[in-house]
Image (cartoon, rainbow, N blue to C red; front, side, top):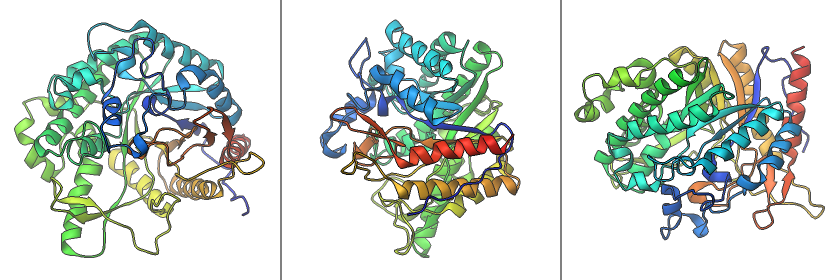
Length: 448
């Protein structure tokens, strides 16, 4: 299969990067004072994670970070987006700070900077300390204060070197899947718990922004949202209604209050009992950029067995799909980038985009992933088209630099530019790694 071409003319200063998250790569789940998160607990709940997989070891990035950063340096990226593990820094979620946990992020930040790469820190990527879940987790209004205190601990340690910060990753995913659908931790199907979680996470975001503004002068602060067009499975009235309801939950329940100061109409009606005077002002804090995670559109269908009456449907039989069955519509990515630039009037950074597959070394030990290369080429091309049409897109981060723990799917789907042999922890750059490296070099040459 021929290597897809890529555009070489990009806006000056366009940022190329990669993304990871703490629970998915770090491992060392019980080392140096770290206590369990809600995902450690879920992994030990029968039937919730494929093959009974856990993040106990994952990519062992906690011990192998220096080699991983060396791979990133060779890739030529300008930025590395990673998350901090709350239970590594504050093992019980609040109270005593774990110095060894903070020391790890000190070392990581310094190593990333020494490689000529800019660290982008996300404070929360789903691994809430289990101790806080025991107090009610995100269903407890005090969780906003817990998060603010945690944000302050990390900002005080790393704020002298880290300029770019995100409060949360994919608000809608971890609240909807964790509190309404039992597809993620903590594993509830409860409308009331879900609504409380939505509002309290929004409050936590606002509190976190205020902490970062106070403690990190000159910080560039954003939030990372999964955004995908929601289309009905077939043109039936129940499925069209399901798509409209899912769209509010998925695409608007968080960016609208955070950036416009109000919830979308139907969510505003049902969440009203949990909103107190002044809450929306606390949530709607000025931001510097909009983080977008996008893989493809969602197809919705009516499902009365689930709390909100909607569920995930299937794309048309003839729809192009990735190796793991996710629909591929690069043109939807282009349109979304234009829509977001117009709707929220913030610079957009694509903080996740990539394709999962079943990548394995061949007899010579090489890992060829032409379908991932084609996916990346198509989406980067669509992003280039969106920029040409006026979208204010400033950067692009591939998910992910390493194969890793993929939540409920365990170690089955592989999203990495680098293959990880989880038995030996050997790293092997794939053909997509070399393609992305060449794109970055060509983009740098084209912008001179």
